[in-house]
Image (cartoon, rainbow, N blue to C red; front, side, top):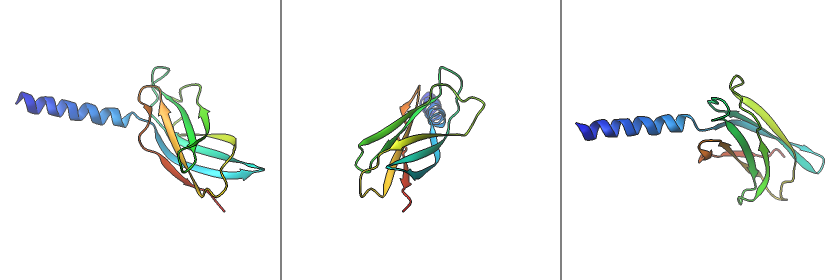
Length: 119
């Protein structure tokens, strides 16, 4: 019985932690001059300065970092929310980008978002 109870508590705790990680709901890209403006919509159960979504980054298909948008404060009452990063230089021939997000407790989320670039 103890092992069952311990397993149930561990499973519930693990699920709760995953629920508190930042999620990327949507992203878009718009060419502007020589670069791109990338807009990303995040959802996270921000609780205040101790736990909030604090950044997202843009990567080339090969994982090379192309830019990062820091989020300087919690968005407790603004969920989901969208922020943009301008002037992202995308390598020639890239047809998509990878977006990753982070929060102050869990770090970079395992789940990423594939953003297909418009023609």
